[in-house]
Amino acid sequence: MRIALITDGIWPYVLGGMQKHSYYLCKYLAQKKVQVDLYHFNQSTYDISKLEFFTDEEKQFITSIVVDFPKNSTLPGHYIRNSYAHSKLIFEALKDKLHNYNFIYTKGFTGWYLIEQKNAGKIKCCKIGVKFHGYEMFQKAPDLKTKLQHISLLRKPVKEISQKADVVFSYGGKITDIIKRIGVDPTHIIELPSGVEAQTISKEIRTTGDTLKFLFLGRYERRKGIEELNSAIELLNEKRKIEFHFVGPIPADKQLQNKIVIYHGEVRDKVKLTELIKTCDVLLCPSWSEGMPNVILEAMANGLTVMATDVGAVNVLVDNRTGYLISDSSPETIKNTLTTIINTTNKEIDLKKQNALTSVKENFVWEILIERLLKNIL
Image (cartoon, rainbow, N blue to C red; front, side):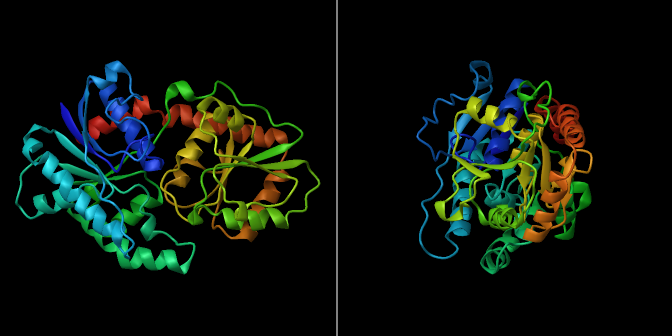
């Protein structure tokens, strides 16, 4: 059995949620002894030829094919043009191997040209699946500039690629609704959530202490709702001891000068990061748009409850048993929910934390998800 996994990079050679998802796909397919032709590129200082983040046994089933992404220009629309050019380079790299594959899994725009060629009847091959993470370009934008980019640059090609693919992957939740709305045949949609590794899941929660600790984990990106979260924090006037911990490269001009807010910067050491997560109680994810955030999965796997906006596939993970699902990213909505959490008893918070941990163990483990993937595509 051989699968072509065509990606816009894998973690940690390229950073991002999609890239981490690609890494785990590749890793667990290899563990199932599926031959994986991995088409990817490098944006790091690591030596991509070594694939040192896979075990020796896993590497026996992975063939690495590096197809460099074209260099960016300063002209408007360069990302879309370069993505199409990259998809043509990928096609050239795999066109003579198409007969070898049982399934072709493409991420983002990487399969654009390949899917066009098949749809036009110019090539014959196995089924081609596409995954566009969260279809954020069809979700609510945080500002006018982003909205115009979505409308003028991204929506048309994403819609066309999705309609022409044999299979469209969805995390579920509102993402499936979007995929149907843009005209994809529901019978072509495969719902499959993301997950964590079983060995990374905590055995138990840390009970909530006298100081209630909130956590924001990630880089600054406008759609992540940091500015609205900052405004909400400034509106709080609570007597209970609380702390807000921000982990990630947050620009200085986006940092609050507030004694209850602590900035840790970027933490790359996995052990230190995990220990820091475990000291907190509530993950905050007030995004304007999302797919299925790894940060929520990782927080729940470490025994945190979650406050998150009901966007993308977030509601597959967060409900009133595991956390606090909010309707929008406005400062007032965030502030009101923070106030509710602050006024909640430790016992109730701990119950949500335990439910979150149990949910991950039972539903979002890669060892189980990879079996579901193979059952659906082969």
